[in-house]
Length: 422
Image 1 (spheres, one colour):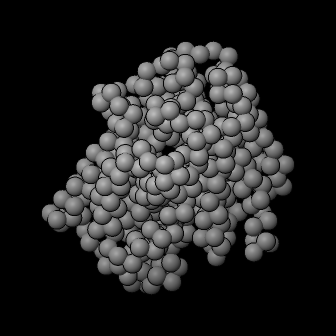
Image 2 (cartoon, rainbow, N blue to C red):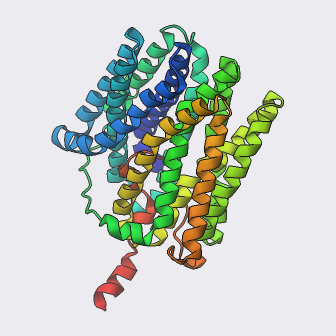
Image 3 (tube, helix red, strand yellow):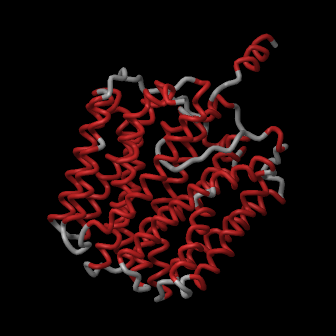
């Protein structure tokens, strides 16, 4: 196993450090904006510009990487992200921070694309599943560790900006020193959007819903904690355990989704999450560790919606279409991620209560569950036999390049030969 992982150690190390920096960055900026006196809605609008940048970066960074190479592109993008972080610390302004977040979004999605396309080049088909799973674990683990780094400095000072900058610069080192060859950017042949919407509406709805909720958690979670007077230490535990819950629940939820019809699993999961979000309001008013236990389950359910939705969409297509279909799924996730912070911050502001945070999740997940049930009942969503469903994979939203190493994208060569003979 060690020999199999050796070519990927540098990539894993860079991904872990990058995920740590991004995990700390999202939480710290959200909290800092609140402490600086910005309203909840303004905070949401500033932070949502990061997700706009991510969508733009998906198109721009592909050409950058192709023209200058992976190492140069990664170095330039990491430098851009670091520069934006330093500017956050030097100048505090709503408009300026929105611009900084926009360019940070472009830079970070580009760095994900570099690492993931490199994985694709170096991954052999027989170990693709293990390499992909470990990579996704690194994403979650790094995000969790980054939350704890919030305790390394005064949130009202400049220290944490330097910590984030240090991590971003450090993630260049393993990439710059690797002996691996420069990979080629994989080619993508787009699948028509109309076909995907028609064949996989549940997958589209699930990914859009996940975008609405995941981005809202990362941007408004710290605001919620501040409003209910949690200490910085307790806030970091809240964020850490929610993200870790998202990782730990992936396996049991994945097994469940593999054994049952996903056209039922998706609405049931959303409905259950809606009910549990309501229970979180009660849990938040009990003892701290009961609240932390509950938030682990909350995160586990929330972060599982995206991978189950992706698996459901892939049930409807051939393996050769996985990457292209995933590009559309990521687009809808991105659209949801742009809307999420603005919608959730508005819910908190309009209800004049921090618990508008959970009410937002209740409404969104309930609406998603209702729409999914409706589509299945009207036979708009096709029912796939359980034995024909694709395998569930641990997943976290990164870039479309991750789908290149998703083992579900491997075409069955035997089946392909038979199809050719026919």
